Image 1: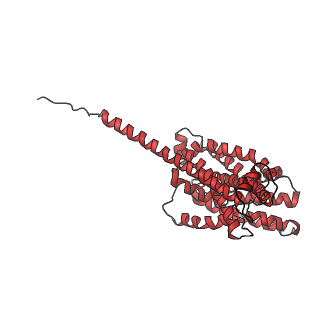
Image 2: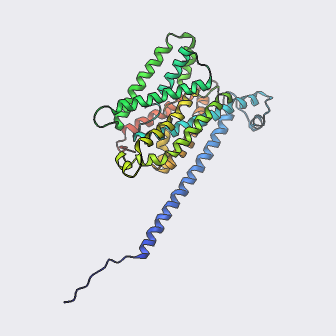
Image 3: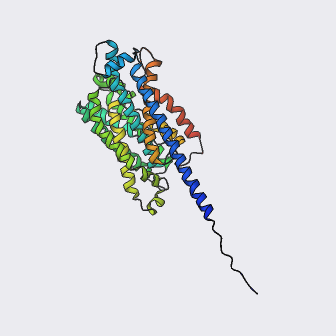
Length: 358
């Protein structure tokens, strides 16, 4: 009796087709990401023009061009000159908060993570308020270092509290610990400024969060910190992709989990600490922007963080413009506008049970 051994038949054509389809999908995704990036850059340009042109006094192209060329001869030219640093600060603050929010969400694997919700902004604010009230700090660089230290201590406190007990720092525990620490630090801020009537008005205005009154002298000391924070965060993007798989899986793939977490946390603190020192605590940008960007580029942090920078800059700049127009001829601070935008999104995220992990 003759038997035949049947060997599996491998179709080289099928392999080539599968490889071709995979390459096509990669190119298609890259093209879609490129188109989305171009669209965000165009929106950012439009937002910058609107920010320079609109306000208590609307200005035209001749005045904008004159101010950009250094000629400040009319009231319109002066208005443009004063709005330029404000516009730049709004763009930098939005980009920094968007990236730091994305990093924190990846670091904690918590869709509710945000510099405001995890106590980082509150820690920076308390440190600055204590420095003003008790140590009479008055230099921008000192404000920045104080805010960074406060943000770092708050982040450590939240993570330590969330890590207590069995199970470690789960997303739910991080959210609860962040809410508790934020409430405690905010109460301490109030306790510090209540007896100090000489600084209460200024500090309370700063605590709302805004970009009005910005000058280039304020911006220059912030730039090295922000640049360092952006570089560290972008370098940590691949590590965040690994952490998204879980600590055990990431460690099994050769990733040093503790180093990845520390690197990501340093990048986030260097972004939101200096911005809080200059603008005050601005909430919800770091929560809303990364979620919106995930609809465009998915969960790959190598794409998500750059897109969060662009989208955050667009959101905060347009929010600042909206605050000027809604209360014209007065204005609403941008922190109030972002709260109106972010609160419904926060409620939607909490109610959406499909968002279980990042």
